[in-house]
Length: 411
Image 1 (tube, helix red, strand yellow):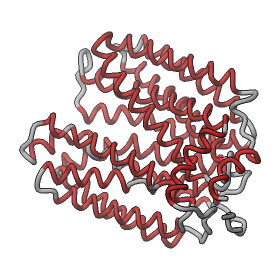
Image 2 (cartoon, helix red, strand yellow):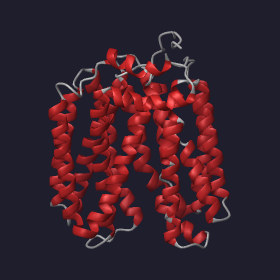
Image 3 (cartoon, rainbow, N blue to C red):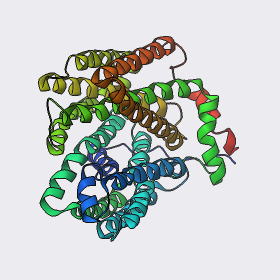
Image 4 (tube, one colour):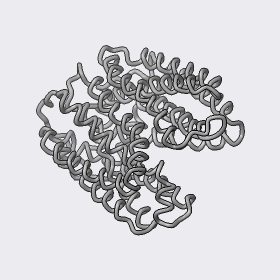
């Protein structure tokens, strides 16, 4: 069945872009409220801290399921309704978290929260749909920067609120914010007809179809997953470094130091313009060179907080810039399947982040900070090799070919 014709999308205003960025940041923050609260929760629910650690796993697994099974619906549903419904559902899950009487109920609630807190992954491709071709990179970059802000700020906000009002307060407050954003987005998102229509099973299958059929998608996803692996490797190991000798910083101080990574937000705000000007691939290579330099600085920063802050800024600017450029290029692959392309991207990023986090734990036990920085350097060299081999061919997006590839299942 052929896709219905749609009117040209309206322009993505600055006010709407900002609202999307805030909503995306709040949504992704739901995945990270729990991380600094495990000790609070274990004490409040009278369980072991090791058992409470499963709360993070439940949220992440739920999120992976939501990204895979729900985000593709953004291509076939009215997103003006779909996004607010997801926000309201996540608000209900957050409220259940705030009221949870036992660790079992909290595990269930956080699993549901992970599944439903996928609004940011729907809003990002929607921003690409609403923006004109000349401004698409900027709009996607700003919304992506909102996501980064949510990731970095959520742990710090969660810790401060828990110290002041208890661990349940953050979930209650997040539920109120989710409801407010649902109302604002329902009013602000303009009408936009679905890009295509197809049965659900074909919709999910077509996520893999575009990756299998389009070489540019595969190469871009490899770069993106490598970036998230390096990002997760660094941040996981950094927690080990700062909490042990010679620093021995408490969780709140580590969270505050992590805010230095907000420099990556500025790169997102301005980096999208590089894509709009046709400099996406050269800028991606430059970003990976900067990441390589960051791990070189990290190798000698093991006892200097000043060098650690410099490393944080360098690595966040580098890896967040390449991440948003990957997303902008992938969205240029097809205007009819951006939600499905974003599903493939988010799934690959999740796998990369999981590998990076697991590797950090293993490497820290085997060789400490030195082993981590050597591995980070190796990841950067691998990414630069992929970029060098693909920048004149496999990484070049040819949208006309790609649109036929992603829509063959709908015919």
